[in-house]
Length: 383
Image 1 (cartoon, one colour):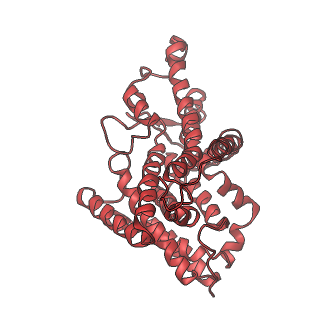
Image 2 (cartoon, helix red, strand yellow):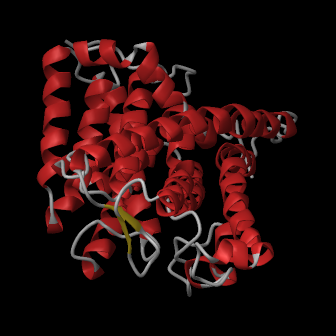
Image 3 (cartoon, rainbow, N blue to C red):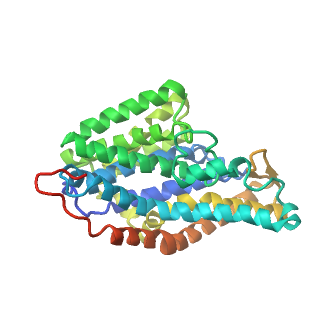
């Protein structure tokens, strides 16, 4: 069964793909919560870092749908496009970053009281000033100096912001051949990645290339979807989801470079939104996860850190802290799973708050500030 693709630049929301992004965000959250629970030992959780590449592929697909034609035809300028994307990403990034800065200030002002529970000096190590500056300006994805630290997942947000700029220029310059140009960029990024990394697990060192690879494949996937209508139906959707689960669960080494291709196939199939899997993902609970997925992703390490501190102080469960300050839950696997589920509930609840009070107002403000962009002169391209 096939379905006609929506017109380029249409306001259609890919609800199913959004919901799937929410599920992927939860799996990334589980990946970052170290425990000996049964949930943490699931192969799909052990390899949960790969789901970041779903975010990159989906971003390329959605941006090509929403902005590709408008950028190519000059109906929106690169500057306005980047302003809108900044309004989408930066307010929450800054809010969480300031949350981490506040914790460091507590160390400065807390003296011996807090010092009994925290053995490190404030604004040092992974919370150094150099990394803070790079995080503020979204430079931490380029591997310059000591960028590792603060809100670690934000490396991918920095990578996406610079990738937006790269592909906005591609849409403007390629003049209708953005699929070809995007495919070429994706291949170049892949070759560059493979030249120095044995797998796709690059973040602060080379994360921009990883994003360009996935984003470019997302743009190509959108053009294939536009041309062929996308495969739909329950059988195709179930097959696509099962293949991705099996792949993520067992991929390692060089095989992980295929992750964006696998996720591109999932996006291509589920974009039609007409099978049994799509009907499940359109339910309110999954739509809620999709709506709050960015907040879930951005705030989860902050919440996990506070959970770890509470566990250290209360000694509810046996824990171990490694040299990097990461907390590992030990003891009973069932207790660890119960704590993991409680942590997930805290993350999702907090994500709804930050979505409502930070993310959504930030987007609205950027739209108001950029609403009155002057139209380009007749015959002139957007600048």
